Length: 173
Image (cartoon, helix red, strand yellow):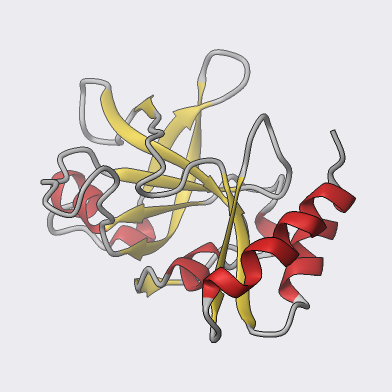
C-alpha cells in the first residue's frame, strides 16, 4: 500500500495522498464500542482507520494537537477525535490530556491517548445531523478494501486514469 501511496503522491498535481478504511460519502460506516474514562456505560463511536496525511488530503481542519506520524503506527495506540466527541464526553476537560479505551484484538480494551481534535465530518449527506462522535486510528496497511484519498491542484478527473493504472500495476489482483 505504501508503494501505491508514494507513486500517487509523486504524480504531477497531487499535493497530498493518504489511505483510509472508510471515506465520507462512500456509503460505508463502522461503529465500535468504547469506554470513556469517567463514564460508566459503554459508548458508541464511529471508527476510522486513516493513514498519515489523511486530514490534509481531505481538507479536515485540525483544531488542536498533531497529525498522526509514522512513529504512531503500531505504537502507543494514539487516537484523534472529532469535536462531537469532545462536546459529548470531555466538557471542561483538555482533550489532549485525555484518553479513550478502545477495543483490542484480545476482546478487551486498551487506553489510547488523544493526540488531536479535528472538525466533525458529515458521512452520509450534507444535511446530516452528526450524532455519533468519530475516533480515528492510525493505519498504514490494508485490511480488506481501502480508499485512496488525494488533494490536488489540478482537475481531479485528469488523474483518474493514471491513478487507476498505478493501482493495477502496484496491487494486481
